[in-house]
Length: 398
Image (cartoon, rainbow, N blue to C red; front, side, top):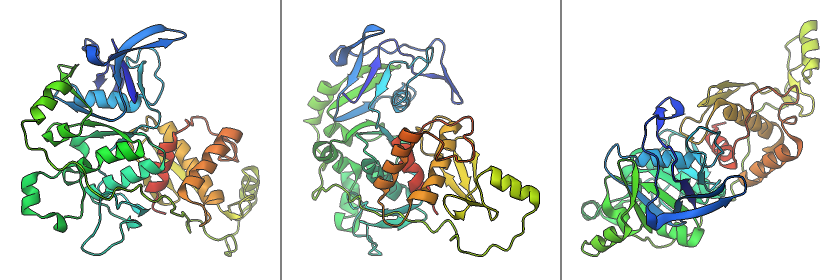
């Protein structure tokens, strides 16, 4: 299974700015064909809808609950408190919500699985840009997700780049394939599952092409799921099938080395004089008189969190507003400390990104927050997932 939603769950929220369950909403009820039982030691047997690995398509009319179901699944990587309504919505803990992110930076990412033969001859196996388009950002998001160990993609067609997701036959007749560098997700989804064990849950409302690759098709009807797989598959036999599988599938390369010149060299002269109170303060917080960490020998890095969506590290802002599985500012604050530690102690121009994240996770697991906050551990830090640590490092422009 990739996910589970218990019968009786309350998925709609009170409002767009509230995480409380909506009163009077329709309780979730699994279709009989997808219903399974789980036996829990402190709850007993619960029944609900099991979403198997593979490609699951969620369709339906507007305002019938498609995105609400997907949002419940994207938060199902976390535990929920009693009264949330989604206590037994459970998703593979590596699940990654994907979307297009126009303008994000990309650094040496292998996006060749989806984009090749660019007119400017830019290398898509080590693709970099300070200002990505919707399609290139979504291609990079998938490659980075695989790099982080993700086994389930959660995608909403509404927040995706249209030309990245699908190209219809008429468009392919007008713009030939040799003039289009993008291989749409439609033509890679099956190979991602069959060859990379990467499942997909996709909300679609405008293109029927995805019916041809789906293992299971769920129609949301007034917030109630209906299994329409057999009915739709029989209809597919009466329609012309689009191209659904591209050639030359290969797992992206994940050997990229991460380095940083963000921190000034400790040997640089610092002519600024410090008063006696400043010296005492520096000594108290583990800094030498030039503002450098005593154990790192480097210039002190200042961090500041701006709610859940971003933080600054010195004067560089790390934009996380489209990392949708961050739930509160305490995770964002934790990411700022993890990034600072990586800059001061880990990023040396020799380690890969995977090795860097491994070190951060192992240090946090074995030593807690003290190495990341040597002066004092502030109140209000929440551990982020591995996927969000990757997302933070990938979006840091420094």
